[in-house]
Length: 279
Image (cartoon, rainbow, N blue to C red):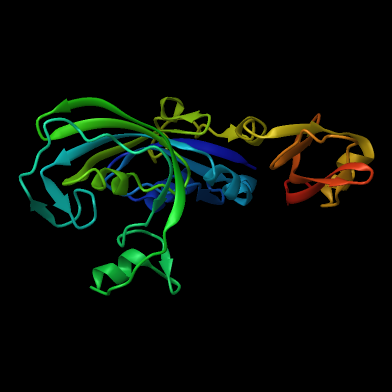
């Protein structure tokens, strides 16, 4: 049984759903993803296989890094090349100073955010009027890489849930002409399986096992009765581990058993399972 993560370099013109379906066809396993890419965008997509599909929330929360090309002097109804383009002719002599830090951002109407149980982009395509709630995002880096005429290149490192095309549109009369995701947390597009989406590719799909895929989380090693208890979804006491924060992997010599949340108690630290991977 396959369990783990497939690093996919998604090409332009297909949806994230299409990419996940292609990996499912290659592996025959249950699949999911950890954060979509718009059809016009390219780059890293984490396709989760087998038991890894139950861990999507932990991968989704990882920070992302993008390369984007902005076109100035024009605006788009969707902030990207797939929308209705209107020329304004206002091209700055140099790119505006990009914003960084903690910001408030309203998701675009043409997004996958659900409104009343329905995807926002479907309602927007019908011409409905609505407003999505703002959310807090963090832009760690927003670097100008180059500038030539009406185009400029940027590298952006940001928190999960950030709409890069909205960041580009926020620079002024501009839209995101190209977008490529290069990193998700510790995972790089350079390590993607080049044949992951090729149905006639020779050899198996390259699946990063759960042990390595969860390497970005802190780990607590247990054995014996504690390992059996964790495998049955019971909390395990591991003494004073006050330095633990956020989700941790509970593992034994055979690999991950569960992803748990540390909880302080009178007798030390209790690891309460969030997702059990073995039982």
